[in-house]
Length: 113
Length: 113
DNA sequence: CAGACATATAGCTGGTTGGCAATATATAGG
DNA sequence: CCTATATATTGCCAACCAGCTATATGTCTG
Image (cartoon, rainbow over all chains, first blue to last red; front, side, top):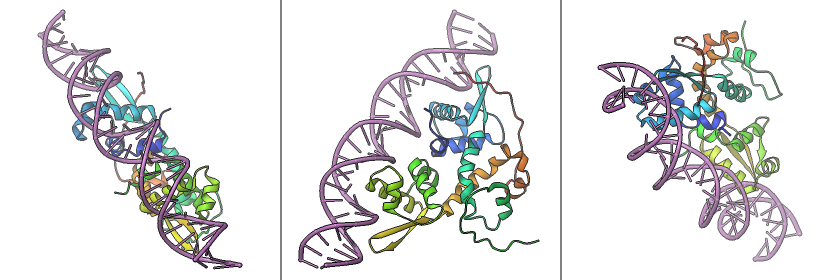
């Protein structure tokens, strides 16, 4: 099996790659230049990201253009959702969007208007 | 050194422990019973979670009551924030809170070995 | 075709890690 | 003090992993 999203993201260089892809597509060589890492190293990480469904690739002659496939990040976001209430009292409008379940000790500070 | 929040959360049993702590404090023995794992195994994970600042402990005679310290999760949340726009277009009020920079053009996908 | 260029894969290796059993530490009670 | 209970620490091991070098694959150009 391919690693879980969490395991894949545990590696800092892979998070870095995703960050670099956020503005848009990048070629492998491009990424190699940004990360201080060997080309095979980068390709290996890209494979792992690809197999985890976090990036997808477009071929163009010898170049391969990698781009974000952010769907799996939603899984992480879902895991995180029930915890948000613990540190985002200020942004509690957020909870209205993102929260849905259980009972807990709600120590909301007073909302307004 | 203590691992990063991402590394610590890569381990499924540790995420499970946090999930179990979400409703409130639990003793170690309590956790051992829920997870199918040896007591030393659980203690080891708890130590890692403690050193990562994700849980804190309260002594009570022989018992130790563990509870969530969710602050480090905010770090994860911050990393995730700029990605949210990619799957939560519906929730674009969110972006007003969380986002800051530009957008890209989605491309056709292709995937092959 | 040859050679250059871009990327992927294979093979190796040192370091890390999760699991367990054994043992240590601490506390409570008789 | 002795014993039971609860948890932590230690020591060990097999598995995994990220990085590297060397090599393979694929494509473009002349």
